[in-house]
Amino acid sequence: KPYWLNWRGSCCRCGLIMAAPPLLIHFEVRQIGADPCVELDADVGCSINDVKIKLDELCDVPSLCQILVAEGVVLDDDDVLSDIFPSCSTIELTLIISLDGVIRDLADDSDDFKEVMHGALTALERLGPRGGNDAIDILLEAIYEGLVSDRAVDVLLTVAGTGNEYAIAALNKRIQDGVETGDCLHAQALILVSEDVAALLAHPNQYVRHEALVALSERDAIDEQALGTILALLHHEDHVIVTIALYALSRVAAVGDERAVDAALSLLEQKQSDIVRGAVDALGTLALRGDAKVIGVIVALLSHDDPAVVRAAVEALSRVADSGNQLVISSLIGLQTESASTVSLVMTSLAAVANSDDRAAISWLCSLLCRGEAMIVRKAVQVLSKLASPGDPLALDSVRSLVQQSGTWLERGDARVVYESVRALAQVAEKNDRRDIALLVELLLHGNSGVASIVVKALSVLADGGEPFVIDSLSALLDNPVETVVQAALNALLLLGDKDGSHAAVTVRIQLEKREASTAAAVARALVWVAQRDGELVTEALWLLWHLQEREEEVVSKAAKESLRKLAVEALV
Image 1 (cartoon, rainbow, N blue to C red):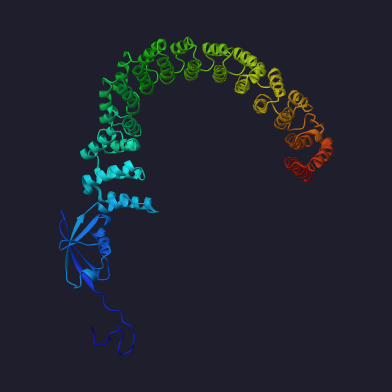
Image 2 (image 1 turned 90 degrees about the vertical axis):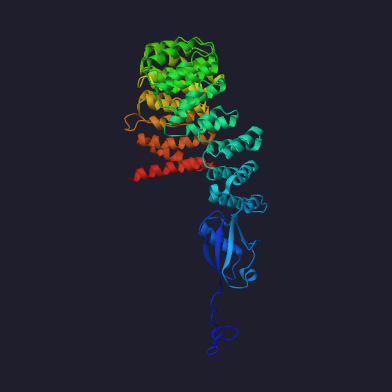
C-alpha cells in the first residue's frame, strides 16, 4: 500500500477517501472437447455465477449448462472468489457442459414456473446439438408433461436437427406406447425432425398421418421428392393409406401434372368406394378445366352405386367442366336421385357450368320450385336468378308463383324460402312492372319484419323513385293496424318517394298516441320527407313533430327533434 494512504484508505495529507485498486484473479478455462483455452479476469468479490455469465459470452455455453471444476472440486454458483481463491494467482478451471440445471428448472414449481421453464428451454435451444441425446430425452419428457409442450417441440428441431435417428426412434417409441397427452405434439415433433415427411403418410398412428398431411399442404413449392413418395403410396395395400395419399397428391402436385392425373385415373377401377371417391376428388383439383378424357370418366361415375362417389363426381364436374358443356349439363339434369343434398350439389355445379339463359337448365330449375323441400326450393330459386335474364317468361312466371305461396312457407316456418324468392323476383322481373310491385307490396301485409326488410330492398330495385303507383300502394298501408306493416310502408316511402316534388306528397295521418314507439319514430322521420314534397303540409308536419318530441319514449323524442332540426335548416336556406 502506498505510504500516503492510511489504514482506512484515506489520504494522510487531505483526508480524501481514495478508491483501492481492484484485485483481480486471472482464469484459464479449458472446455472439454474444445480448443483452445479461454482466458478472463474477474474481481475477487465476484461469485462463480458471475464467472459463468462471462463464459456464457466467451464460450457460447449458457450459464445454466455450465459446471466449473478447479483441482477436481466442483465450484458452487454462490461461492465468492476471495473465499475459495485467497491468493491472486492464475487459476485453471475446467468447463463441463451439463444438463442438470435444465432438468432442475424444468421441474420448478415456484409461482413463476413457466418463466423458469422457458428459460431452461432457451438454454437448450442455444446449446443445440451439443446437448446430445440427453437433451433430446429431456425435451421429449417436456413435451409429455404438457406445461411448455409447444415450445419444447420447437426447441427439439434445433437440438436434434433433421434426420436425427435417435430422436426419430424415441418419438416413434413414445407414439407407439400410446402416450395420450402427448400424441399430437409428439406427431408434430416427428414431422419436424423427419427428412421424408411424405413417407409418414403411411405411419400407423393417425396423428402422425394428419400432421404429415398438414405439413405437405402448407408447402408453397412443388416438392418432387414428396411427390414421388406419394405416387408410390398410391399402390399401398392398405386402402386407408391410399386414400390419404390421394388427398395429399391433390395438395402437392401442380394442376395439370400428367403423372398425378394418370395415377388418379388408374384408381377409378378399384372396388373400394373410398379410393374411388378420393381419386375423383383429386381429379377435380388436378385436372385442367375442359379435359375431355377426365370429364367423360367422371360423367360415367354419376351412375355409380355409392352415393358418396356420385356426390364427389358432381362436385368435381363443377371444377373440370368447361363453360356451357352440354354433355355435363344434360348429365347433371338427368341424374336420378331422391337425396336433397345431392340435388342441391347438382344445382351448385350447374351454376358453375351452365351459361346464362341455358333453356334446359332454366326449365329444370323451374320444375324444382314445385317441390315441397325448402332446401331444394331455396337453392333452385338462387341459381335460377343467376342464369335467367330479366323478363324471361318461364323464370318470371315460376318465381311469381313461388312468391304467391309466401304465406304457406311462412306458416311452415321457412321464411328463408320467401327471402330468396323475393330476391329472385327483383332479379328476373322488369323495371316498374305493376304486377310485380303489387305482389311485393302485398307481402308487407304478412307483418313479418324480416320479409318486410327484403321487400323494401326489392322495391328499390324494381321501382323508380316517385312512381305514383308505388307511392299510392304504400300509402294505403299507413292506416293498417299492424305496426310492422306501417313501419315497412314508411321505410319504403322514405326510400322511394319522389325527389323532384312532381307528385303529391303523402300525408301521414295516423293516431300517434296509439302507435308503438318504434313506429312513431319512423313517422317522425317520414314527416321530413312529407314536408319536403308538399309545402302546404309543412305546418301540419311541424305540429306533429312538436307533438312527437314530447313523447316519453327516448327513441321517439330523439327522432322528432332530428326531423325538426332538418326542417328548420332547410327553411333558413
